Image 1 (tube, rainbow, N blue to C red):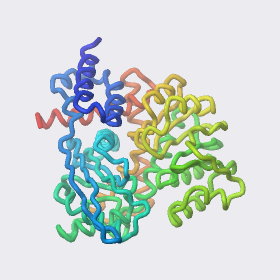
Image 2: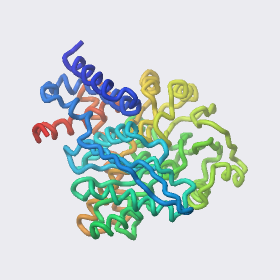
Image 3: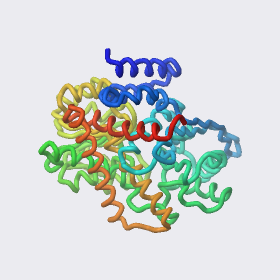
Length: 448
């Protein structure tokens, strides 16, 4: 065992001992650690400075209660969190997630991934994540507003435009961001740069809603192009039917591919003619209905319960864009049998470690989440820049910058993989490139 490998395993064992039940966080750490040994061998001073153990421990975790009153006048209580993971290259940046599954492990995994995702954008932003186990589904606008106001009453003590700039995530869109900003402004005065993902009328950025989905496709197109392929004429399956999935589907169609299936939490639709994006948007964003409504209005579509990754027809490209660990080993093997040659991730860590091994063993082009879905946070950073300069860019300006950022992320991963003697390993290339930048910044700043 090399010195680097021995160091990696010792640090991982400490992380495991400290939080044996934090399975999502442990998975994220293991995925990074499995790829960065070459960087430690090349830069042994990272071991001297104990960078890994410092990097896996958040700089700060804030947890708090969130009391709020429902429409019946009953008092409800939820838990709130903010994980401020690493500020070596800039203020903490990462979304707020409102979902019943939110806990410290999930937020630590998301915050840890965010460090390296943000590093890859080339923009000066560190990594963080937050949220609550509050579920906006089934709540009235008034209930959501009261919850958001209570949540921000505590969170506002810990954020600021040069300290920590939250954005949205699952369960947190423009409505929730608007309510939270209103409460922040009430308590602290107007400071538009404290949150991103704001509605455009509140100095939000154009193209922010589309950014993660568009960015996923821009990254994937670069990966395909580097291997002599493109979306043109390809059949694509996308999981999810929220913002990421909808705008990824739209952009795939613009690039000449055909998305034949997408999903929600109950099941999936298959439409051999290609998913009708306008109908999907109407059902999910306007009517807020289930995907069964799509089948009722589209004669060419069929609906099936269960995971879209149990889909058994042939297709070419998979874009998992729903949630963590949605593709396991058996489903990855099913993708291989279906003829899939490219998997690119729009969700955070949607593939288990065993699934990623299947991709590698079968030479599938793999775009890891921290690279492929960085478009959302990149555009959030562009929103920060606009707020700081008191300016407003056009949709085309933001989209052009997003395309350039995503192309550069792929090229960085590709170049780094080549430099370390592992050509085509875009996972290792992305991990090493991001890790080295953060590690170097930590060393320059001393023992902090």
